[in-house]
Length: 388
Ligand code: FEO
Image 1 (cartoon, helix red, strand yellow):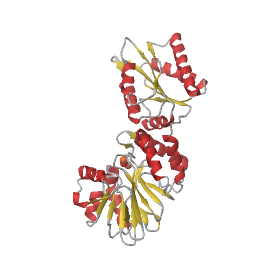
Image 2 (cartoon, rainbow, N blue to C red; image 1 turned 90 degrees about the vertical axis):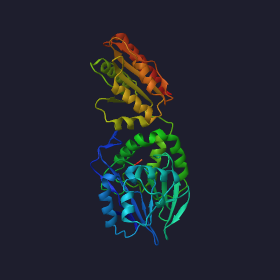
Image 3 (cartoon, protein in one colour; image 1 turned 30 degrees about the vertical axis):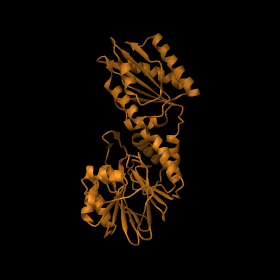
Image 4 (cartoon, rainbow, N blue to C red; image 1 turned 180 degrees about the vertical axis):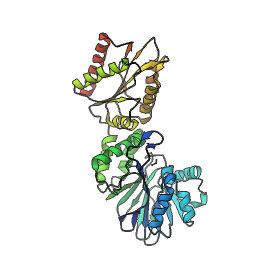
């Protein structure tokens, strides 16, 4: 339990040891499931809870904060890392009501088995008085699910933003201290959870822009006592602007594709283009996702396996398709022994992207001088697009 300001506490749990989120994105620095208690002069509210694996820590923190009574459990989001301990809270504080929107209520009934009579449904913009403190509910859909909302504490100017603005970073710091480290963690988080929803995020940022916010208190990572730091980062990530950077993600079995990748990457670097190269067999998928946030383009490189793309390359293509980065172009390069449909397969997976598809470079066996020339041509085409 940690006090933020008088009568407002963080009571969630730090998960130092978690190494994977959604069974997908590596968490090199763990994460946290933040939850908040607000003691008003008349009522006490709990904002969100903790992942079911951390219920014991979370409940110990609430008890440690000397909370005798909880009147309202505000559920900003139904996903289990924040709703997973609600049933335990309702058992401990039987008089408590769950305050949320209609969509979230239905999800909590489905996911957590919470009884319908436990809910009070609120509307977008509705306020709830705790006596000397007032909560205002602001629907912020798609950060992360369609039901997700934020809660603004009017008197203390704190925005409890749930997943929005979160970062996967376990530290004992309550507030952001190490900005570069938090920036990287928040970008990793954005890349996996938020990047596919750039459009809704634009609307949500617009929705909160007139709020007088002194502290942003997300449900993962540290609190921001300089909200501009993370709001500006989000504005950059959701903008249409890209950096002078290309992601080259490859897999190679016998070395042909790797030779092509090395030649292309060296040529791109010589042309002044920033490159991030990932060996898909060993890469941190989170780093790849971070790179996609502001990359101008992607080159996927794969050998042909059993007449198609290598499954690891297909996985990367599937990930690019799911994360919907704002890339402007996409190219496929690779090698084959006797034939196959690798290029068609990879392009066929990335159907969500409006990126321009550049001329592929596919080589039979080991790359030869004419193949390296084709790679040089591809590098030139990429350079032209970066000049734009
Ligand atoms: Fe942190 Fe969408 O849950």
